[in-house]
Length: 629
Image 1 (spheres, rainbow, N blue to C red):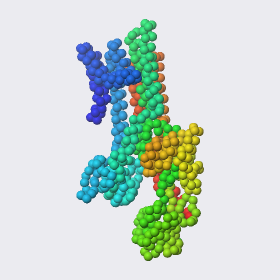
Image 2 (tube, one colour):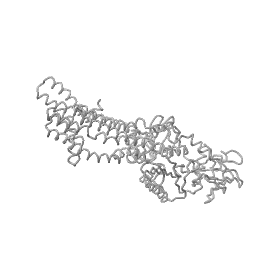
Image 3 (cartoon, rainbow, N blue to C red):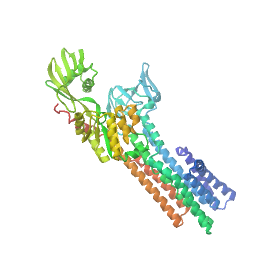
Image 4 (tube, rainbow, N blue to C red):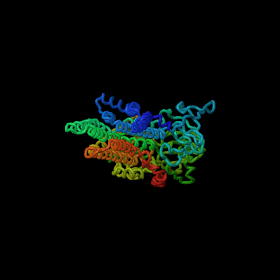
């Protein structure tokens, strides 16, 4: 109760209701007139001063506010002695405003609760041992200890320890994710069974959680195209309502109609014809969609992006870093003699001093398998060929093979000049890539196209593995933008997904551009309409579906609000609509459209695992593992 009374709208509505509850029995029981007048006046003032003030401010800016119409109607009722009817209008109007304020506050609190996940304190470690500090005071480079059950206080990298991190509150992923030294962790996620030491990589104000919160706040301050259109129409429509109410008052009076009955009919018309529900029909579902997407790792810039996503009928996907991981990985080890681990350990020992991307991938795979690497001497790198080193008294050569390959790289390993085996490396597909592309094609109604600067061979190989039939290879950044421009010229609404600075023109040209967070520079993120914090392939399909649900709800709200207005207006003009019934119908429809729009927060319909899970990733890796080089 105290939380509710903290809202000014609730306090004023409660005061108006209390005054009304005292005024009505006092009036009916014949209490002294001054006492009844004071009680009614208290009701009018408590429930009507704020909307009256807002209405007058809007009028000063030459805008007719619907709140002012309600107050004028209530004062008109009081002017002809209908104090009870006017007070009832004030009470219902104030109560409706209080209910909307409570609903908005709860929604805001729910979103804040979903997004404000980082703990208030952290355990920082240094030369002086452990120290409890405010999480907001952490700096880049600090190291913190996160024990089992604690929340990670900042975005960073694990430097020691192995654990499982529960990311469900942040990403929606249902299963804990294994994290060890070198892996990233994000603020607000929950540490599992192991104690870990984390190096802070980002200022607490720039964490993923803070970014989501800021994005949702910015989006909440924007208005959709439909909302702006509705508000433009509302300003003109409100003037027509006033003109209609004046006509309903003046014309019957000119023909000798009863003043009280005529004024009540005109005031009732003014109330029921007001477009409150129509004005509030659009934004709640769009904002709810933005909040749902933010919780699942998709930051959208504003409400117009949701509207455009609902109209998407063409998709352009970048290859490297979007469909693929963007870094080579060892996919197969083929020894001519001995074990695969022994061959890999030799190659990794030789590559330990290499800065080449393939060498780093070989060393990373050996470490992932927990292999011990013998020290290497006489290391030498031969540009364009490979590396040579002495490992345990044997000369080991690791270099790219002359064996032709389409979508992977073959590396030869020679020991003392004799072939020892080969390693197969590839820029691996993201987990669930094929299933995610199929889901995106189904959601949009057309298969995505692959736009890449890579050569035709590797591009077509990746496209075949994910089920994409349209491939545009060998493209410069401007070429990608030109292709999308051509689609838009044909009347299509294009969604583009890409990473890196080179994709900035593509993202800026598309109707909706989504940047992959892990590869996006500041330029590409700025050019995009949203950022994919996870699931660059799995997120777009449910995102489009969510946007279309939000659009359907907004349209249903508009239809319902219009139907209620038409029904009440016809009732008032053709019959006798009681003022109390008109007020109740008008305010109830306003509340219902808000509640209907916000139901996306409760049942968003977003799949729990948007990327298809590791099972799909393992299936797709099987297309490469064991393939002939």
